[in-house]
Image 1: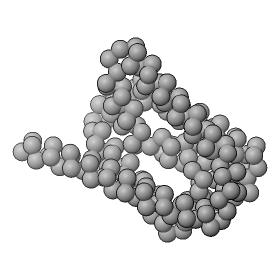
Image 2 (image 1 turned 180 degrees about the horizontal axis):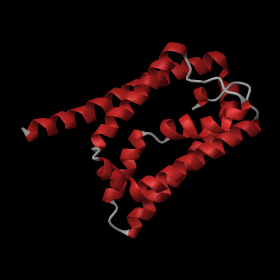
Image 3 (image 1 turned 90 degrees about the vertical axis):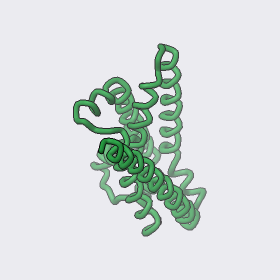
Image 4 (image 1 turned 90 degrees about the horizontal axis):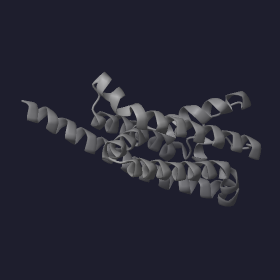
Amino acid sequence: MLGMLPHGMTPAEAENIARRSSLTILVAFVVVFALGEVVLHFFGINEHSLKVIGGVVLLLMALEMLRHGRTEMPISASRQEDIAVIPLGIPILFGAGLFTTVIIFRQQAHSLWDVTISTAAFLLNTAAVYLALRYAMQVREMLGETGEKVVTKLMGILTGAIAVQFILDGATILVLQILNTD
């Protein structure tokens, strides 16, 4: 997340991006929790296909982090609201992996208590994302330029590994489904 934010942002700008990104993922959660399975069935999309595309998106981000040491995009003040929603809110914070996870949690929620627990967990995670984005500039200052590059490279490696695992998991199940239909 730190690498997505432009250098030289004011605390007010960081707070605005944090608020809008958090609101974006909260709205996405509600929509996917309520309608995600219906949308997938309507378009005939398998949740394992979401894993594959989520892995590809993550892999592209990881490669950028490893190549340049950052994922930051140069933006003007007028575009800050745009990055808070796209790409930061969707697909980076709420991407295919989280989309699939929310659908799986919804499928496993058989009672009001289950729905309440899933929703509370997501709200806590959204609050953590807000705080991480809100105070990202202070973290950037503490790390310094070299520290930020080191952390970004390490996170690029981890993100790449997660991406490859997403792709392999999704593709393996899709291939097995194809082989079992013959």
